[in-house]
Each structure stands twice: as C-alpha cells, then as structure tokens.
Image 1 (cartoon, rainbow, N blue to C red):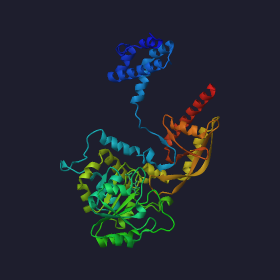
Image 2: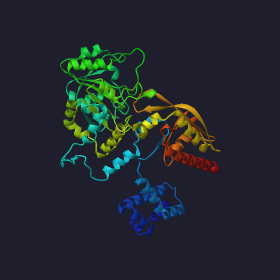
Image 3: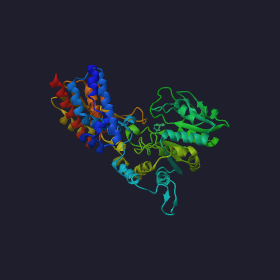
Image 4: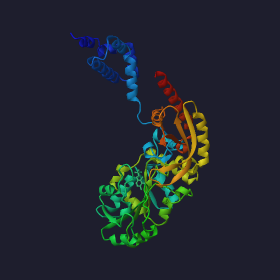
Length: 473
Ligand SMILES: *Cc1c(COP(=O)(O)O)cnc(C)c1O
C-alpha cells in the first residue's frame, strides 16, 4: 500500500461523521442535505490535497478535527446573500451600477406595509368589486402634470417597447438620426424599435434635423413620431433640432401622435442651475406632446418603473396590449411610487426624496461634512485634504452637468491608492470611491450622513489590516 492510500484511509466516512455531536449541531442549524453536501465537498478537497502530496499526517488530523467549523463557515458563505448595501462615495447621484435612486425610508415602509400582507391592489373598497392597480397613482400624477391618463410598467425601456408596439406595429415611426442612441446597458433605440415590430424611418442627419425633414418623411404608413431625450450625450457645434412646438404642430396637422421618451423623469422644471436645460415632463406635456414616458428611478427618485403619461385614448390602448400584462409592476412598486408622488403633491419632494436632496445640497454643507470626516480619518496611516470638485447627476440625466462639491482626497502613507480603494470595496459595508491623481476621492454628496461613521470604521479596520501586514514583514 502506498503512503498516500494509507493516509486516504484515515479520512472518516460521511456516515461516521454524521454521528458526531458537533456535526449534529450543524444539522440543527441547517438541513441534513446541506451538511452532507458540505462534508462531502470538504472531504473531496482533503482527498485532492493528499493525492497531490500536500498533507502530512499531522496536518490531516488537525483538518479532520476542525471539520465542523470549516464546514460551518463554508455553509455560512454559501447562504450569505450576494446582494447588499454599499456606500456610494462616488458623487454620481444616479449610478446604475449601485442601484440608481435610493428610496427614502418612508417609501420602504410603504412597501413593507403592502408587501407583508394583503392590500387593495386591485380591489375597490367602495364597491367591493375588482379595481385597477393604476388607480393607486393615476389620479395623482394626472393632477400633478395636468394630463388625462397615466400607466406604469416595469421600466422606461418597457414603456418605449409598449408604446411602439401598441401604436405603430408594422407601421413607420419617424426618429431623428441624431436621436438613434444607445442609453447604457444595451438599450438601443433601433434595436428596441425592431423588437417592438415597428419600422424605423430615419429622419435628417446626425447633427442636423429640420422640421422639413420630418414633414417630407410622413406618408400614409407613418404611425408615430418619436423624440428621444439626449440623456447621456450632447451633440455640440453645427447642430439643429426642431423646436418642440414645431413638431407638435406638424404632428397635429398630420394627425400622427408625437411621443417623447423623456428618460430622466424630472417632473417639474427646476431652478437648479444644472437642471435648467433639462426639460420637465410637465413642460413637455404642456407644449402638446401626446404621450411622454420616463423612468421612475432616475430624477423622480422613486422605484424602478416606466411611467407613461398623456392622452387617454393612447394610454387606454397601451393598457389593452397583452404585452402590458408581461411588463406590469407589482404591489411593491405601486406602494413606493404612490409614496413618492405624494411628496411631489405635498411639496416636500426636495426635502425628503434622497436624489432630490442630494441634488440640492449646497456645496458648503458637503464641505462641512467632509472636514469633520477628514479630521476623523487623519492618522499615522492616512492623510486627507479637502478639495473643490464636481458631483455628477449620472444615470442618463443632464449628461455633462457638473454640480460643484467638495471632496475629501485621502492618501495612505504606506500603501498605494489602488490598494486603499480595493480594501474599501472589501469593507463590511463596501465603500465605492474613485481615484484621481493618485488620491482616493470621497464625495459625501451621495453618502447618507448616518453612513459617515461606517466610513470611519472601514478606514480604521484597513489601518489595522495594514499594520498587521507590516508586522508580518
Ligand atoms: C434611462 C433611459 C431609458 C431607459 O430607462 P430604464 O428605466 O432604465 O429602462 C430610456 N430612454 C431614455 C432617454 C433614458 O434616459
């Protein structure tokens, strides 16, 4: 018998292990199947190590003795959720990678209230009969925007799909060549049009499209004019785009619906210097656009949703489309959306909706917070300085608008900025920062004040990890 196979024989059997008290304790915590799987996996690892000649007799004994704790931590790892909170110190307010608009705690409470029980989602409490889920937001948003009707679906991409498929299937849709764009994460206007079953009729050129280009493109097969808000890009220089009023007039004359994909969902015009150029849903509707769609989780600051507002005839037709059933949202979205819209209704939205609050926070307020945090971080390990900088709206809203802010620029006295950034990502609550000029940049505009202490403890932990590494050298 070889040495290896002698050692292999010392590996206990699963059935024998299952009789041990420590393993029984695991079965009390998890299912038997899971524990068996964990044990088998661990034994397999040991077997491989033995065959590769990496395990001495003594080490093997130790490994077998610690089997229960190893299996336990394996199972803990396997059962830990992968989705979790991060601290967004990037200064990008609507950041798709970190979940776009954060909801206010009250919006989350509204979700909790309907999610954990039954609700009147589609039940009319007056009549005791079936109601429609859109009732929970339609009247309010129509009052806010002075429009006839509204519906909601999974996201704005779905809204564009539903609108095109309902109103223009097998027909021509006019879009300016300057608006045939890709809006992050594989949302491309030409592709979504194709899948909606409409025929794309390109109008004008990339930099210049005139109202006459639209007029000349209209024929008896034209079912819709689509205008796409340039959310994440800007064509500058020698450019032209027809005034919205010209398009409205042409659409009315030709009896063709004019639809605007407004993207960001800024409900009302804003006096913020960096949002002055951003057309609001309200103003676009007031100009006479027949139907407007936008995201729920961009500037609106609500849950992920695609909101469609405008003429009743068009919205009703969309509601009747069987695809609507495939794109509808659940009670949790209605709850968060209704709470969000109530804040617009009562005039509190700039104070209580997180993205709105972050947008309007004065740079001096961020500076004061950054100074306080900087003092807490400065140590033998880290040094920091306050610098003027810019936050971004992000998420396809007001593409190149930069909001003045103050950032905290941190350096580690011994370690590289890349190492520091990596360590922050691995913190218990990961901190997402950016690197600029060899400094780690924290923009507190997108950090909730109650998260500042977590940042302090993340740095403290990194300092002790760095110290441990140094002591081992
Ligand atoms: C963001 C955006 C979309 C996609 O919206 P989702 O809610 O992410 O599906 C579509 N069109 C425009 C103009 C956008 O800005």
